[in-house]
Length: 191
Image (cartoon, rainbow, N blue to C red; front, side):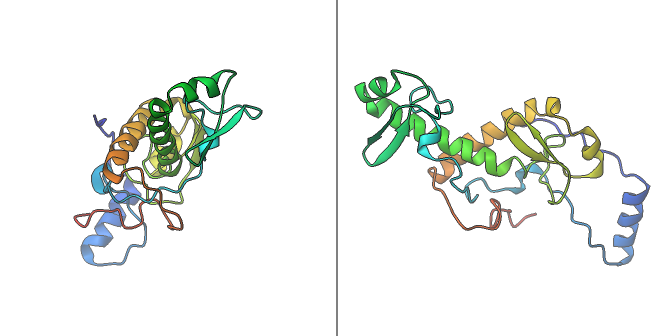
């Protein structure tokens, strides 16, 4: 489910820049792209949250002093008492859901600055950043700079999670380290 974008009309400055483009004058201002410009199968998501940061039973942040344990070479930490015992009673049930949710959260951390929470367009970068709902968001234009407030990010958070889940299926949850951007090589050729 994609939400509709509310793109602003061209103001005087944007109209002037557009006119310069028509007559061939170089314009160095980057432009935002539509949300579908990103190939979710090619994103490069770094692993910023580790397995011990998320309780595998409750899928919430682990407690700093939570009990820790290992299973099949992966370390886990509990969010509350009894999580370890619950996990060990049926590890297969919790390993897959933990791996998936951890990847989704890492995607959301990396990509919240890629899609403008106001217009849902791919940001050109270097715009206003605001923290909201546990993520850092970046606007795509000066119009959105004025609208950037955490209460505007509820729909954006839902859309970001949907994209994360779709991307997990497409990538198999593979992490990529060392990319300069999570969309490096993931912008479709048609854009």
